[in-house]
Length: 204
Image 1: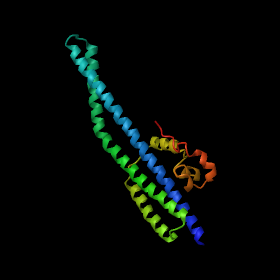
Image 2 (image 1 turned 120 degrees about the vertical axis):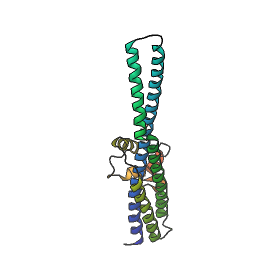
Image 3 (image 1 turned 30 degrees about the vertical axis):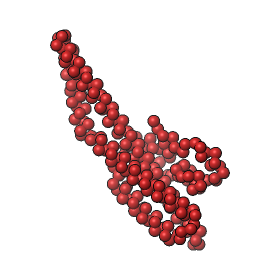
Image 4 (image 1 turned 90 degrees about the vertical axis):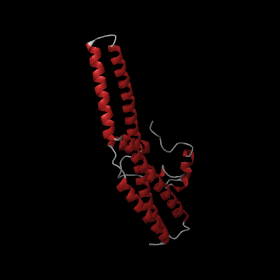
C-alpha cells in the first residue's frame, strides 16, 4: 500500500469515528434538553399547586365547602408527590451529567476535525497521524464508558437535528454536514452555495 492509500484509509477511519462522536454529542445534548424541560414543567406545576393549596385553605376560612376542602387536599397531595418524584429523579444532577458528556464529545469532535485537516494537508507522516488517531479513539472509548444512558426520544430528536437515520449507518453526506466545506468528501463547487445556510436545524 502506497503512502497516498494509507492517508486515504486513515481519513476514512477518522471520518467514521468523527460521525459517531458527532451523533453521540447531539444525543447527549438533546437528552439534557429533554430533562431540562421536565424539570421546568415539574417546578412550574408544583408552584401552581402550592398557590392553589394556599388559596384554597385561605378561602375555607370564609367559605366552608366540602369541594373546596377536597380540591385543596388533592392539590397539596399532588404537590407533595411532585416534590418526592423530583428528589427521586434528581434531574439537576442528571442534566449536568448529560451536558458534561456532550461537552466531552464536542472536545474530541474538534480534535478529530483538526486531525482530518492534518490528513488532508499530507505534511505530517501518516504513522504519526495514525498514533494521534489511536489516542483520540481511546478518549472516545473512555467517554462512551462514562456517558449516561439516553432515551429513544433523545435519539429521535438527534436524528431529526442531524438528518441521520440511525447510529450504525452514518453516510458521508451526514458527516460532511458537520465539517467545514474544504474537509468534506463532496465536490467543493457544489457545496459553495450551501455555506451560508445553517448546517444543522436545531430543534426548538
